[in-house]
Length: 362
Ligand SMILES: Nc1ncnc2c1ncn2[C@@H]1O[C@H](COP(=O)(O)OP(=O)(O)OP(=O)(O)O)[C@@H](O)[C@H]1O
Image 1 (tube, rainbow, N blue to C red):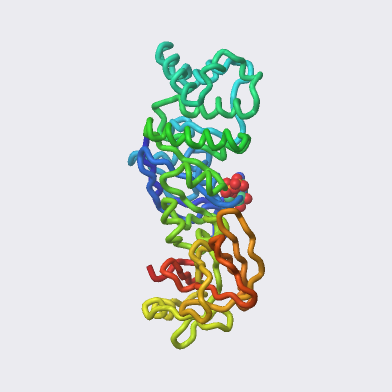
Image 2 (image 1 turned 90 degrees about the horizontal axis):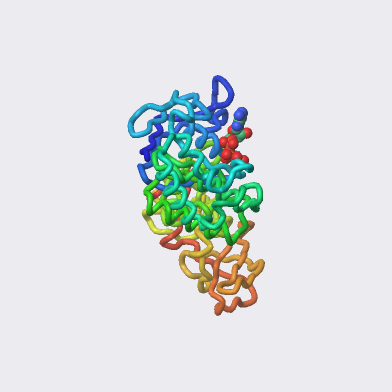
């Protein structure tokens, strides 16, 4: 397996890109460690497949380099890079047995039959497919076929990395959960370099050691689940990670306070100084998990109008409006919400601030 490095990498499908908007992948440098599990996460069109295809060699980047273990592979074909790939839909040979499908990549590499047999059985066991090995692939259901695709990706030990492009789309939710856990187990056992593309944050966060969050062709953060949740580098990460995502609210500055709409919100001196020295559009961010109902006139709180409180079993999801800005708060079930205005504590230790959507004041 390989350590993958990107040096000033960028890609534009159109010639002569003039602005950053012309890039499907904006310039970036990054390292993925050997044996690491990484997820590329972001909405449709953000550039995940472009980056994945650059790694596999299907797309040649218009700028920069890709290195595998320090070797420049930018000009090498997919085959020369020795990458295994698992796609969204099963890529298997219907006329062959499950065994022969799994054995195919190994026989292709001329491995001795005994080694092929041992490895196929090992992978079939991991995927709980031992009983199906003798069956014809064409007789299997869609999710079983996709398990074969996963198996074919995992069967070779000599690949530089295994790339998964939304591989669990056709799998039912329960099986999805099981396969995700199996992939994680396989990763720990075999120490493979795994790259996993998804637009599903749960899938990304449960699978990967580090998640690469992308939006509009830009990598906005690379980090573990805790960093993405507690310390988003960019407003998009706050919004995209979490359910519901972070409350993000435009703010302005008064002499000695932050203003949310027309209301003054008291923040500490350091935070105020940081905000005053920033020169972009300012936003406050606080996750619903840290937004709590405060006592009337409590420092660090603002007055809001309760819109609804929805019971979700173990908490209630409160939606409130503060001068036209909507906030969500996860509130314990025993808290009774009185008639009239509610006070929301927005200046908390977990509150973060952004200038032009970039995090400030860390
Ligand atoms: N072959 C191509 N030619 C021109 N533009 C392309 C090509 N492939 C992708 N794009 C554009 O590049 C941008 C990034 O697309 P990409 O497929 O990498 O995103 P994605 O995050 O993988 O999206 P999805 O999840 O929908 O596959 C999009 O604006 C897309 O329209």
